[in-house]
Length: 136
Image 1 (cartoon, one colour):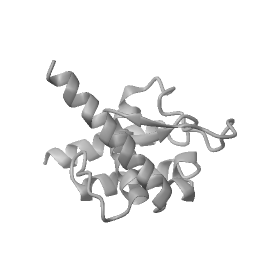
Image 2: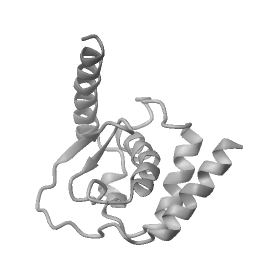
Image 3: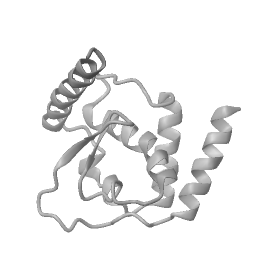
Image 4: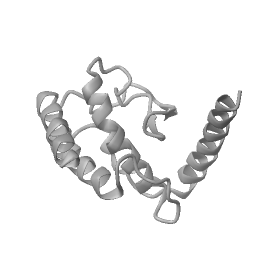
């Protein structure tokens, strides 16, 4: 029941903000950055950190987490924000409402061994830093 209510809230958020995210990059070589709430990565040109609507950024944590799993491949499991099936459903829903979003570019949603290694290394460091912070 909770998943259904959350899905409806996300659907309404996507509907209200349809096509509001950038479709093209203004940067030549955008940096990939770690996003702590989802435990995933975004590129600086995707417009997610510039969005003033916290409901939209909150909904996209499922999207970018699922996308990270697509990039690193099935051999690495970073868990899920909610569940793998839920994250995937929200990812597919987002593709319907933001079909031209730069974050859905094939290069950012496909397995890439070089990028996967980089993500794994950055994630390990981020997790280590978080644990270090908790132990203080």
